[in-house]
Length: 207
Image (tube, rainbow, N blue to C red):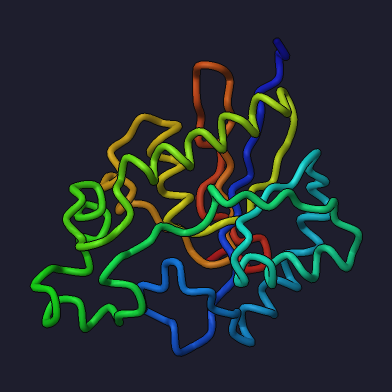
């Protein structure tokens, strides 16, 4: 066993197109906005300096477009994993944040708790969501012990990764910011887990 931890750099895709702001996009294959493309271009030099030993990614369009500038700079070819797709919001898919309460009688602010309780109609069961994310990350970690790995995916997937790896309730991650084009770094010491970096945006000056 390696003495060094395996570090997972969980990167959320850049900003999505304006019509999908404050919309539960989930499995909709939406593109980046102009700002999102700028964020992706600004991320690329940082990722080049990071020089991860392996790259894994969701196959969804917004993730692929986030990767494009880095790939043009010679990034390692990513391994696309279906398990890293965003959660399926069921009947909430494509619905604006402000329309959730009048349409469904549920608060959009409670989306993580409602997912965890399987209370969003036709949404992906939380057991399936947790299982696919956790098993994917465990497989990645087992294949790259003691290495740095970049995982480019989605806000919901990063929240579930934190919940699964840290043994937290999914709803507890509502207290954490996971912004567009941000990095969250988790060190896996087997069995100890440490969150070393949260919501870091290397392309943005500190406030």
